[in-house]
Amino acid sequence: MADHAAHTDGHAEHKLEIFRGLVKFKSNTQKIWGVLIFLSLITIVEVALGYIKPDSLNGHILGLKILNWIFIILTLVKAYYITWDFMHMRDEVSGLRRAVVWTGVFLIIYLIAILLVEGEYIYQVYKNAAVSFDF
Image (cartoon, rainbow, N blue to C red):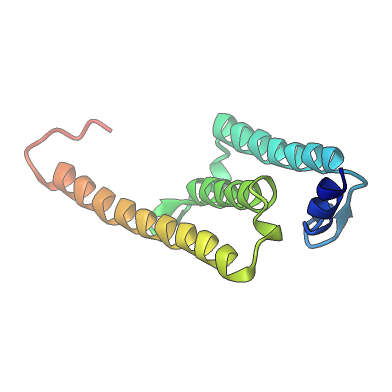
């Protein structure tokens, strides 16, 4: 029993706040529910925007509709909070946090760049070639 007490004393407590300390919780259970509600709200906004598709968000920025950029940004926010809170990256040393988070950020940026380049190529092939343009 004494070994167990000594073992738990060596571990750091998980931080019970989100949004850089703006929202604080009294227990881990409350924090889990708080983060779950935050992620659910983002998902509800994404689904609502995908269902409604407002005309005001059909303008283009860097080759994509504004609505698509909103989806990408909201998805990145969700991925960040899942990694930061549920995978306890907040409690790790800064080197490990940076290695995990920045690797994911650069991978996503790279995949978006490939998507834009290849999408434009396919668009030009269908637009200028003998293949019919059905979409």
